[in-house]
Image (cartoon, rainbow, N blue to C red; front, side):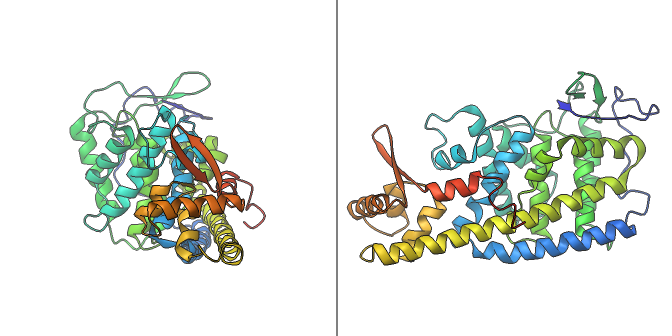
Amino acid sequence: LSIATGFIDMSFDPARPYNDLPALPPSQDLETKPVLKASVQARAALAELKISAQLIPNPSGRINSIPRLEAQASSQIENIVTTPDRLFRFANRPEAGVDPATKEALRYRTALYQGFKSLKDQPLSTRSAIEICRTIKGVDLDIRATPGTALLNEATGRVVYTPPEGAELLRDKLANWERYIHSDDGVDPLIRLAIMHYQFEAIHPFTDGNGRTGRVLNLLFLVEQGLLDIPVLYLSRYIIDNKKAYYDGLLAVTTVGAWEPWILFMLAAIRDTATWSTAKIRAIRNLLDATTDRIRRDLPKIYSRELAEIIFVNPYCRIADLVSAGIAKRQSASVYLKALASLGILCKIEAGREKIYTNPALLTLLSDRGATEDAS
């Protein structure tokens, strides 16, 4: 495990397991004027995103677009590199010759979606974290029971942090973390999110997958707190752009108790990515409306709103997708997709015996990080 880091306080021994990790809540007052001001700005951006997310067509579309970008980016932070294009291509058929990196990123997407659905039946908990990490890693893992886990400086290979050790101790610290998540202490939920994310990463309860599990928990916490309806915040985008600051901020809390800079970093991440995500969603909706108008005008015999939406829910669309959505039977579905391809709205590709129809304009929009920068 490697992280980038800067100065470390000499009183901190990075090679010794941090079994003395303080319990939550932190002892110092964290609601400083800069923090409160930043939290107001972040909440306003989230509120706008919550409203904008309703513009994404139908429930499947709402959970398919930005969350898949989040899955790709969160995996990239851990040097698991794939592309949004490959995530969409193999989303419904992960077994069909997909490369290992894409398969692992798809498991992140699955963990996010399953965690989102589970909020209806159970609050976030240690159990949630275990289930999320199991899904991400694709193995039946549990809380770390053996020593030897350490985080290394990616440039020098030196140990910069050794998390607590011992399954019983880890479970005790996770129980405290869990109580804090659901505490009614009057602290702004976004401030609590920054604190809970640090604590989870400092506990580091699993042998692998902690970072991705923690980032899924962040999004689910926002939903649980009612700040979002769906986990549509592209938070990992900001972390990729500020990766060193992210890891340095985490370590600075441990070594010198630098809570305020860390919380301000996380609030800035929420504000900026909420604004970016809102702009991206609006761009997707504008493209959908323009595509709908074109189909209605140029292909009136096959037009339906549902047909326009399905190629946005599934930018790699198959005949079976139209059939399962009840839009058309197989023969008619084939005719519809060919007609859309003849108009240039879709592009047909051959995948063995199967024909796949891609939505190139949508894929470009989803893959282009700069497409909505001016709007954000």
